[in-house]
Amino acid sequence: MAKKPMKIKRYHGYLGQRRSPVVTFFLMLVWAVVVATMVVIGIAIYEPVMNYISQRREDSSQESSSSLESSSPETSLESSSQPEEPEEVQQQTLRAVYLAHSVLTDPVKREEFLNNAVKNGATAVVVDIKNENGAVLHRSNVKTASNALAISDVAVELGETVEAIVQKGLRPVARIYAFEDSVASASLRRMACFYQNANLLWYDNDPSNGGRPWLNPYSQEAQEYVLQLAAESGELGFEEVILAGLHFPRGYQLDNIYFGENIPENGKAAVLEDIAGRIQERLEAMDVSMSVMIRALDILEPNGFTYGEGNPLDRFQCTVYIDFTPAYLFNTFNNQYLFGGTALENGTAPQAVVKAAAGAVAPMLDKTRLESGGYRAAFSCDTETGQLTAEEILQTAEELTAGGMTDIFFSSAFSVYPDKADYSAGLEK
Image 1 (spheres, rainbow, N blue to C red):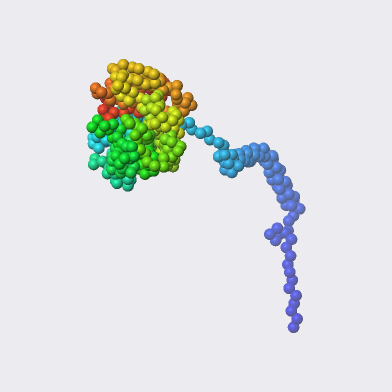
Image 2: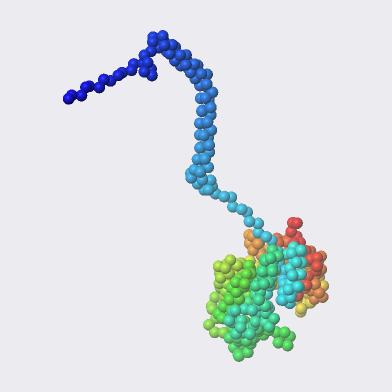
């Protein structure tokens, strides 16, 4: 039997009811009022809202721009690539004092010495590695020192002393007497100077008057011995090595010295320049400076033997200490101070002798080298009757400083200095 088709009921009104024309009109009127109100409100708030949005955008843009500027690699590179002004390094004026081995080996005395050095204006302390007799004063590992029986019975480890000097803010300086060495020359005769080609050691004076043998500067073994001690000093922590006695012997009967066969034809000057150059190169590789010490008399009255022909100052391309110690300027035969045409009577005040000697040396100094600190003064505070007074040390230092030599090494064989010695004398305070 066929199904009856379903009838779909359609609704034409809101919620299933048919609207009347009045209701429709009323609804349209309400919608018109709502729309008009919204338009009025929109116009009223448009400007403030847009201003607010605008302001937010500007702030955001500025922040972003600032962030980009600070993080921009370009800007970073620009600022990092700007050359920095190099800091001007003020080189400290050297005012060195000698620390005797007898004081160094006593911790209490050493501490007192270092405290006084700082209090009185010193900036450096000089310690002997090998003294003028040839004794090695520290426990050296250099084989030649052991073979020559040169290591002193009172030798010490110097590491602690170097550390103590540095802790006081002072510069540790080592001094080595090079060929002025009566110990190794007597023990290892193959390194020594001989007398007239005989199997006899040459002495700089009669042994009964304190005469001593010397190392032979031509000896390769002697040269290597000095070089190794210098290098060892750098390893111990010393920042500078002073080579004293880096020359041929001085004394009596120099013409009778036998240096051996096959002597280089280029002479004494070239030998000294060569060994000094090799030691300097070795030390500079360790960031250690090298200097040599020359007596003022050897500059004022060169004999052509001790340093070879010419001005000894031209022999070395490093800092030179000029020793103005009055005792080295005194002529015992004439019983007066004689140097470079200057004659001063015995008894002349030490500071007056130093002043005269410095004045005589001054014309022989290279001006550029002097101004760059290439020359330093040295003098002993010891006298035949005792020590210089604090006032005499002050006057001597002021005279040397006035002559352009502001770097000074004050020495005393037993480190006996006046309590109020002013090592900074002549400098601006």
